Image 1 (cartoon, rainbow, N blue to C red):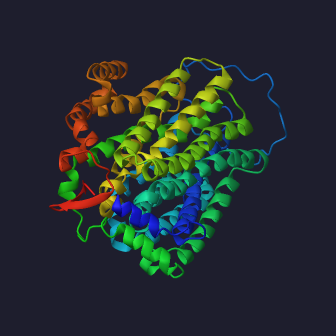
Image 2: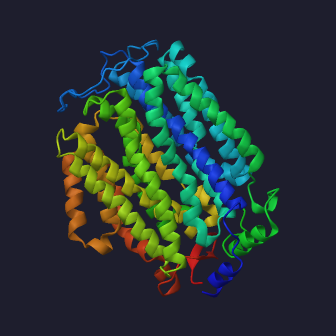
Image 3: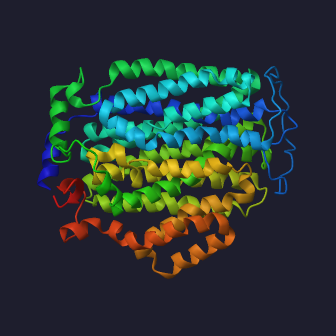
Length: 514
């Protein structure tokens, strides 16, 4: 309490501050990051021959054509390709094969060269390869797959790099706000790029989707390199008061250890709990992000313009939720004296169970277009709570190693998605969307009791024995460490405490009583 009062006393206003300028510029960076990632999902609909279906499973129930469809004049000059469903799956999935490779190395590189250069050149490289996408498509599908994989390599380092920077920039009581602003750009980029890509394809040519967003990424890179610094100490225009405020708030948070404690990290049960949460959320998130335009076109039968706008609607809700939940989370911690662990668990619970409920319900509504779009929108919106939950919990338990512990699970989940890239969400959606809730039920079994997780496990194994038999050892192991994760402070301090100070034990940082 004494520490928090000291922080409030020396708090520097947010307006025009260096830390919030960093958050806004990072927001634009992640805006472009996701715009560059999802634009192909829309453009691909216009790149293939009209008689080539994007859906491999043609036995699913498909909704009838919309009787009120408007046939507005559109540009048809873009080159078309005769790519079958398998080829399109490889094109969409190739990004994630590159993405998984640089996840963990990205954290290591961030600790060596700094998050500024890594994040900047990650987005710059992705932008350059995006500009080369039309050329690669003309050269052949192999070149296009290679270019998309290289884009994934560039984007894979971005989240670890950003976490590395915030470990030096974010005061503890402002973490939820600052990181929420930064990562909200990802949802905003999806919101803008999906409908804008649809309009560009409809009225111009699909090649301009890649030229416009690629050029914006290169332009952002110049601003990032000129205006941003890795730490407050090296920032050229930060005020003395803000520098002292940030450094004093973090002086007991960061470890002086330079080497990465790999073994203690691998043995850390709280870290593995965060990994599982990342796995669960990203499994559903990236499936939707990649295939929602396909679902809108092949199952709900919306045209190109409607497809782009309706595919963006869920991410607009998620963007709003991320911004608001970050403010609420820090308000609960700072003003209402909620413990950090309580806020993180509650927000993760809402952001996992809520989306699962609405997405599973969406599988039973048939061709009710309004309800289908509404359920997907509500589900994705509620997922925004996770940004103030597990997504920033790395900075709570080990800020000095946040870049190394951040996103290995992201790579695992997107690799599983990339291996099949299921083109038909309608036929298999319940499996992907229920996975997050099933794992969270196991993770939070202390709250839900013993019976429900066992029943849920049986259900998902019965639905798809081959896939989930691979995950069975992981799910069983979750039961052994979930209690540890939920009561980590109590186990280490002997009483319930807020994770706001970090101590060291051996070679790894651990939460301790402040």
